[in-house]
Image 1 (cartoon, rainbow, N blue to C red):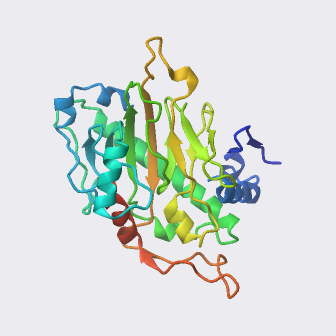
Image 2: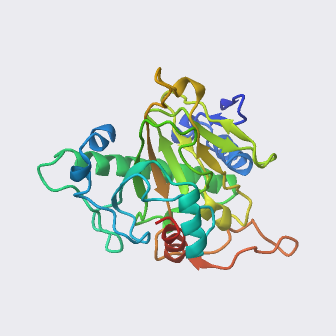
Length: 306
């Protein structure tokens, strides 16, 4: 029997070990698909002076998601694409976090933007090592998900050969505001948080009601994003989530302590055209979405952020 725990927030905590050792792959696969249907080393860098961090600047365009973004440069939006509407949202709810983003080396679409040599000399190596470690985890989770859909476990492998993924280092500085960021969903992330307190997910059965996602030592939080929801013809839910300061995060001076997070965003190869997964549609439940290339979809979402 595979151990699955559902905590008071309703978030499933799944032991992935039996899938990796082959002792009970199908049960783990079923649990992962079921949970997706229902819920859905950076500190040293951010401690550098602002003029140093800006030596690896994020380009002005949101379609080139690499490098450093200062607080307020990014605005998390949920399916907003009109420039005037996005500008209005930025004024109403500016984002307070700063971030650094990278992908695989050799990416011709979005080459990495690193600090000059000699500044944090191990930073690049550590980012890339963690990137590839997350990629291996991603492939195993996708294989489990394929089994959950009743497909061969290697079904998703052919769509993830590049990989065109994104590693983000996030820092929410000490502040006096209660909300760190707007509620949103996204591409499929793996999240390993040094300070995981504050992450909340929306109850899929009670819109507007959020539950805290408690940190579990030694565990990764996996969230299905908008891309996977589209790919699965809405079989999988893209969970809306937000970052809110927990009561214990307040310091003696009334401010909220800093928070760090390292999400890894998983995406199909940009050159891939995805269509609804077999078994998620039929004559009684037709396809909700038309085929689309991964690059077209992701670039549209990224452009709305900056």
